[in-house]
Length: 143
Image (spheres, one colour):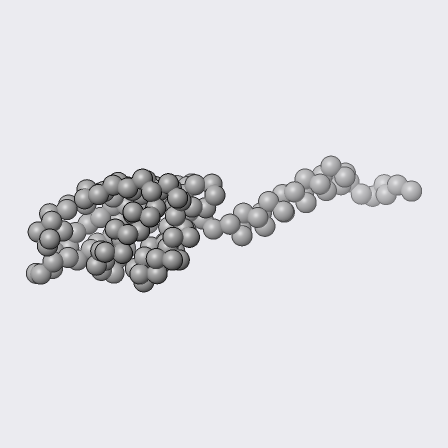
């Protein structure tokens, strides 16, 4: 028995089902911005075990003072830093890329340093690279 009042074909129903399923999957996946921000919050708390879960094994970190191409040396470096709380000014997201502008206060007397961070998150949801730009002179003078 056919339903002559129905205008929805099985193919249309399937496409509707597929579209709804994809929307559910996408809403359950964290955005690159959320991944990077959650990582930074864990690093600020010095919760390096949680922070490690956000990082790719072969993370590429390049900054004015150091560079790393594996996660373990990078995390050891972070553990020895006395990072102050980040004062975020602006966060930008473009697909899997996230950029942040934030201020750090270092030294005595305190000097405010503007930092630009560019992070790339892989399709697996892990941070694959960091690039930092800042004036390293206040940090070098503290050593």
